[in-house]
Length: 406
Image 1 (cartoon, rainbow, N blue to C red):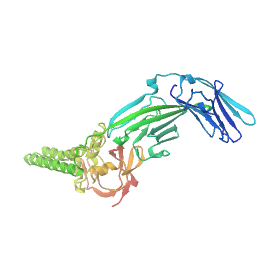
Image 2: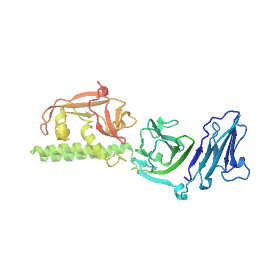
Image 3: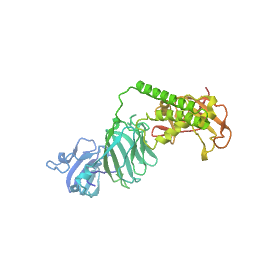
Image 4: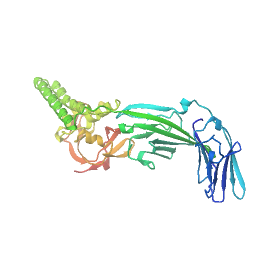
């Protein structure tokens, strides 16, 4: 297809005694001696022949010829002559299909808000003879060669740390998803699709380009300390308001419990309101995680009351057999899904540092509100969390090697 690069393979490795010559319609267009004393392409080989100016490339090891930015006028017979003690050769019949200039030079443009995800879809179905290479600023960031090998970011040769744990490849289409995107990820992304024919006599390189613009979320201009002060102030006001309501309705136990649990919900809401760039579909899962496992002020005596207040249930809305509260701030917990954790397979991450936790176990009862829990067990352990795009959404109970006695 017009605009592709096509490589015609010799199938040999040159030695000092060989001479390799390429012809197009009986006109010499490239030549290399085995000792590399004479190398020429296009106009260097035939003065005045402008057809392939700056579009031919010779492999000095094999003599293979690459025609870059190929055009319909490049269709025809290409002849390879390998001259040593005898003369051998190959003939390649190349047909180039025309496309519009707009399609050939197309750059797909994507705009995305900071913290969100963006998928770069080349619009193809990958086949076994496809080698797909993703580049950002000329650096290889992802590769699919076959079902047995693929890599992303720092796993790839010459890769870097920029996209660590933020790239996802679709093996069927070659689509690349960039998660939790930052403004430094703006730029040009190139996908090189190398199509190799069955007998490896030629290969085609097709390039897809994507221009990604990341829209930064305006900062309030407040320092983290000021923000923390605002949060604390808001929480104190909320707590005071709830205390007044509790006092006014202390004669009515159901109302009292509702407003006690409101403190927990308001706390979670206040924490989650500062989750900049969190995808909408993750928010309910993250808030549920906080409700079940976020317990910076939890004590071992509060298992039954806390689980009732938060309306924590198990399967089929029955009593939950075991629930663990993590005694840490939300930022430290979230860090487990990034640099503060180690991938365990799937979407699981194990914390690099142990956390203080309180584990509550069901003592009696089958369904709320009759769920009774014993005194909680306090320990220090490495926690394993299920993560979605850098946000904790699940606590993995019962991981033996996650424990560390404090």
